[in-house]
Length: 392
Image (cartoon, rainbow, N blue to C red; front, top):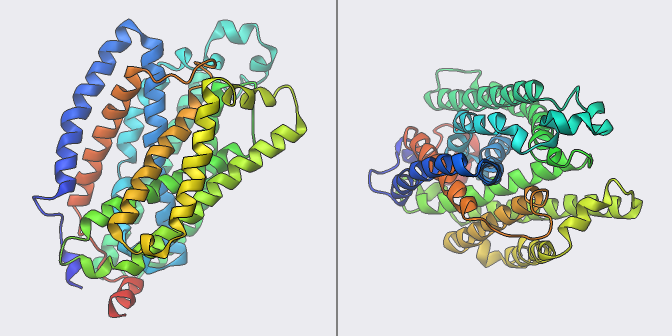
């Protein structure tokens, strides 16, 4: 397979995106750090929003990568390098999480001793919701994710070289057991970082909802990347219309899965009508937040669902990439709807620091992603599924 030896060209839109991301991202993070001196609370809220959005992409890519190693299929082999490259950015995301640990008392009521002292429920949860254990859990999450991502990437290259006869088995086993690990760690990460913003509220579906959103973010991110790589002659045969059709079907499926989890949580909480649960939805369906909720239904579910039913859209790389980019924007709206209401319950206002933080975290993430992608062949060499696809 000639495409296996192909590398990202020195002149490519992704490289320009990486340079732009770095040039914008680093100054944005510096500006956010300066703003934190004058308004630490708002700076951390904006940073949490940006981090919660961007972390969904590498986590989702790692999970989708594991799914493909378990199930097989040319669709995963064709985008394996972008999936691996995004997952390899997780150590950087771990470093970017440090400010949230240091600033936790400005974000989480359970990290404020005076709030815990006057709240019996927070005292009851203090064995789990305390700052040292919060930091230790985050370290464990990122360590597990980093180990899994690097192992998958290393064994994938060993499969390319053909010098490790056990590479296929290792990839399959890590995918199988790794999905169990991802389910547990992503669930608890969602509880720790997002759900605990409102420690009096809880939902057992919240972690699954977060995982579904991560998988959707991953597909919506990888599809435009694959579309940009399709212009390379050595890679184009492996990224034909059938591959994009499969990716489009997967994005449609995870759109419905995301909607199903949201609807399940809403129906269960609303039908139970418990005073400690319903206020979470009351806040998010009143005032300015009602418009955000309605936009999620219309533009995160209905519109992508209807568009992705069209076969011709899914088989055209540019058209599908445009839909995917729109989904990425709506993923940001969804994260905004999840994490911002505890801080501004009366208004769904966007602060200028929100944009600064999104550019800062996103810029360095994209730069690191492209760097990882450029360091590896764009296609796997000896994946049987991809070989069959190209032969067909």
